[in-house]
Image 1 (cartoon, rainbow, N blue to C red):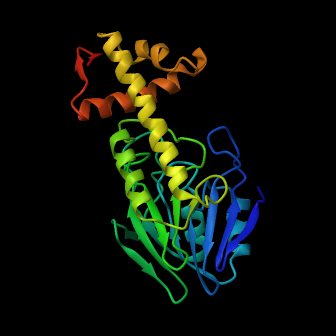
Image 2: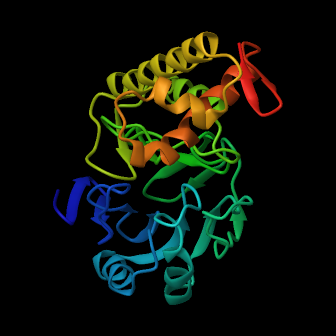
Image 3: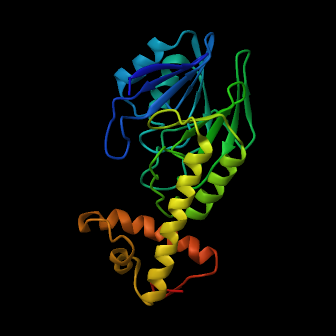
Length: 270
């Protein structure tokens, strides 16, 4: 995956130098517009990446947008805003240890809000699930959806309660599917040319895992989430059980919200 690419007329991508197991090749930063530029997800506060964003901008950076406030997406906003004086758009960070409290939007966005320039129109689409303040941005002229961490091709993102919410996540995926976009530009990885396939794969994968969780609860009533992990994640090594337990908790909380599982003194029953 090249570190810089022209993806479409007026749309460029810069990959931040933060590759890892969780971020893939790195966080995608998108630049839109030629004369007046909007930057989506400046990524982590890595000085050379911020300098690269400014260097690759063909015009003045007037707006900075964040899909959400996880550490690999929004900490670079403050540094870029200080260097450019750009308006900052997004939703403030919710409570939680893995949230970027430095993110301070000058314009708080809600579902359906629009950033309109002479060159392009971006519509905010509120997509809670991975994060309660997660936004996708629909580029009207291209009919592309910039998805942050909401949709990653061939992979499922972490849903970590209490801010992560599996029920909201699946509802938001269906909301994005209904937009009938021509392509998805994710926060990590390449542009997705067949959105319906990608979104349906994630929904199907999550619902299959949910069925495994429910079956495990039915077969083993009275276990904690930690005790349920080996019954559900038979394909996961024990050293990854802690991470798997967070995902299992997200699934079982959805089952509780759906009325098919309930807690009894910290253990679970169907």
